Image (cartoon, rainbow, N blue to C red; front, side):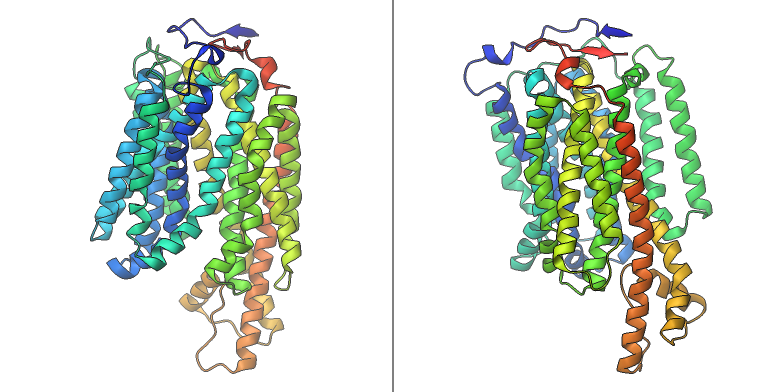
Length: 536
């Protein structure tokens, strides 16, 4: 049935009644831009800094991986809780606290002289990063009228896409010109700009859900469940999906997740009201965010191995080759938002998923001899498609949730992206590795080469799954070429399977998106109203 959310705190003045830039919709967008870009930039800039961090601090590969995974854990675990804090205490306040904390932890990371404190500060940085994105989305949701929300989310997506794309390039310049410390110290001027603009342009702090209490038990249950799930997804590719530790941690995630659902159904002030999932746009939007991130992060992770390992491109050349993908995600999000304001979320989202499915199918057919034109066409289609999906799914979730739950809904959207990205690299990586192990003997036999045994074979399979080739010492030029060719063909077999599955997932998601509600503006209230109708 269709109902309206209960009355809450007095709404802000309609955007059209405000005077000046402070507190206006576009003033809010300008104010949050630097904070949002800082978080997105830091998610990718560290990939370029990792080798320098390892050399300077004497870190192992596993320790370096936790420089990235620690940030992901802090981010994913705290997103929904941070959204609730914004609803309860005001998104302006939470956003500014997040900016200050993120900037200070960036300084602490840059000053770290050992890996352990660096990883600890990265986890804390992820926690503060988790407060910025939901608060920013909550500010947009409460500032823009319903008929312009799609455009606002589109610009928001462009900021994220542009910063994400710029991360490796900016990181490469800073690390090459200075040191790895500069990759984190760059957050000082960016953070100060975000803080100054926030204090100037954001209107008075107005909580949207002052009547509810903080659900401490729900926060604890959900945090443990998400932490265990992300931990398992991160460690499973290394330890194995059937490893005891992986199964135990997945079991912990399942048990605490089930306990969270049971608790939320009984408590009077839930962290995440389960009734919100009765809204088809919200439920479908969350699923689409998971699947979109699975396709994006999974494909990006392994296409980098293809570009550098199989084609032999340098990191900078690989980054330039990926520009058609990253540029399309940055450029297309804003027009995608305008399109959603005009025709609603369903048509753009379906079209985006079809485009992404076609692109992943094309990329699954890559060979060691594929040309730049073919790969670029695939990247353009993938970038355009994922941009439409990200904007459409975000609009479906945020415009269908009441203003009082804007922060929680935004945290849920962001958490879905993070979990989808982890799921993509873990599941697609497992498929690729299994296929490599199955086809490597045949390709070596066809090349007239013998496979090593024991631990050497395991190491070889691991290297091939990353697009590399292990040439035996003393091998002739012809033998080295044969081993390399056989290794690359086995990797391509694995990538074919992984990307084919990803393409099928996108196609299935396109069918699911047909059940989304038609137009976001038809589901909301009249422009300027505080609380939209929610379909329950």
